[in-house]
Length: 81
Image 1 (cartoon, helix red, strand yellow):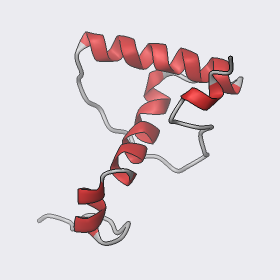
Image 2 (cartoon, helix red, strand yellow):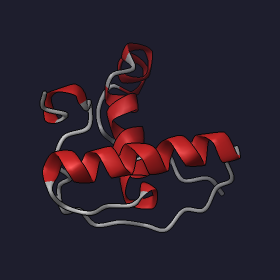
Image 3 (cartoon, one colour):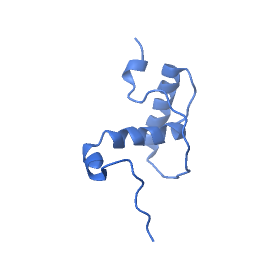
Image 4 (cartoon, helix red, strand yellow):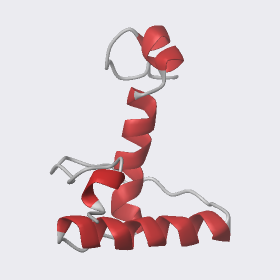
């Protein structure tokens, strides 16, 4: 049985990034680490949860119809100040 077909998050693209720090429950961190291990097994490239989180969030937001409908396009959020 192939794990590749079961993971929603596919191979990771190379992208420019910005550092963001957040806190999460220990149980979520454990699940993220487990997902990272399955992802590495499925795609043959070791990754950690920190690498996967932005891609997971991007996939979540892309699948949120309410967000997509409200945002119109992939424009950057307005700057405050």
